[in-house]
Image 1 (spheres, rainbow, N blue to C red):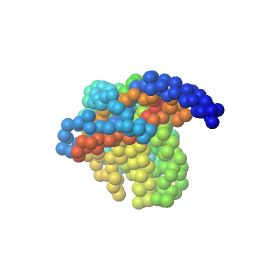
Image 2: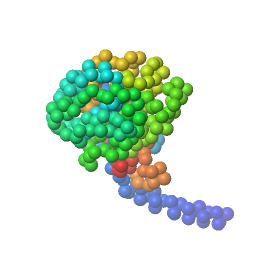
Image 3: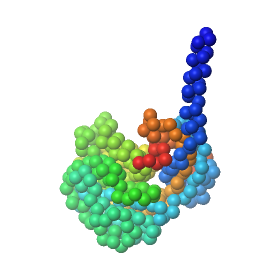
Image 4: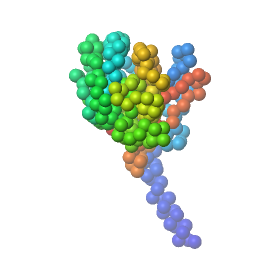
Length: 305
């Protein structure tokens, strides 16, 4: 019995210093969240609560994201139907309506990557001129999720900013085979989601019909995938309907509103999460009546991408 007691005491002695070091060396970590309130009521940041890896965690700060702290990438699938031409004016107006100091880029998803005329710039008139008709070639993107993964892994900026993607696509993953509701677990969609979370990118999605796959099954499949990635990263799928939206303007306006309602949520993460690749599971809520919070499922300790 004496030996067991000695071993127990020794184990406690070995574990306690590591635990103390984790507590004494907190790592400031930030998540980008957005908050909706009814009738544009002021956001009560004191009502926001945070769980990290299932444990209640103190929030150090909830600060509105300033327009100059945003980097917004508009990614358009080059396989969209030619009817996207009727949306070009609204797309241009949307770009011109963004704050002058917000950095934006426009890219087209093609052959598993994103092609853009420029990186992130503040010249909205130049960006509006970059909006063009998609090639409308079925499957030209290869898979929009290949494009998203490649883009976020090579985000064309080293700035510490709130990274946001607006992805305009039919959302179908042709590499996952059937678009049947019974076949909705795509490893490629999952990988894109994980890559976006690792890079600290919030994904918003806007469904638009493709020149190739059509029909209710493809519509359901694509929108389901878009919703999956958006929800996991703290964004939202802006359109849920059975047909291609006749006008994108209401959804673009909604997206612009979400950008204005975004916040940096900062907390202190304990060191010692190496076994999980420094990945923290988050659950952000608010006790404010009529308010809704969107937040990423995970962040990396210290936001080490």
